[in-house]
Image 1 (tube, rainbow, N blue to C red):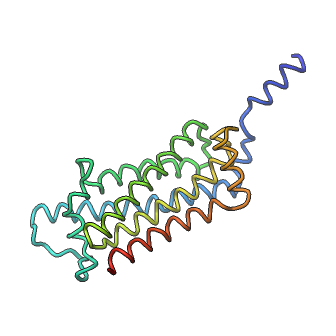
Image 2 (cartoon, one colour):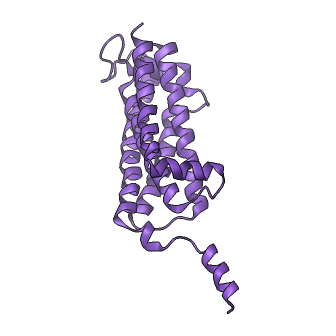
Image 3 (cartoon, rainbow, N blue to C red):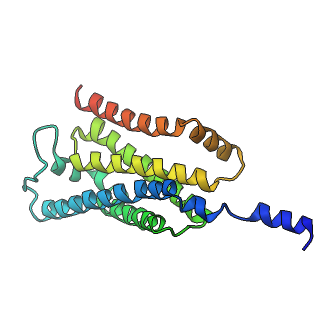
Length: 211
């Protein structure tokens, strides 16, 4: 084999497996798995509560605390089924997918770059949708669902973990976006972004529910 061929193979080879399977990499996968499991719990509770509301519209749920914190009021709004099926059902499916990816990573199964890229983009899309819904609960529905706050917090943590994993595996390549992600992670701007995102949601809830 010529020196040129060897050089091409080295450039095309993925990062060493021990980097992806290092304790740090596995810890990042735990940051995806644990909040995904928590999200499954939250969405499962919402699905059961939605069934209770359908069967008995006058039912009082355990998280109906006062005039501001009311899960039944939020689950009965049209925004809770904006795509047709209940948002909780769609969320449960998303969390199940993310949990399966997290479990595979914890078990040291190395996903392809394309799979990790798709997972990252789905996580960000999920967070955007959850953020939109929290805006709706604050300014249009005018009520707060405790399970919803747990869901959006879980998705923020998942996105933070997936961002670090995407950086480690260079899944976005050497384009402008990939270089921006690399710079953000190296200087920990990514953590500030996700924390800031969560704080913006918290501020929106405060402003919307306390006119």
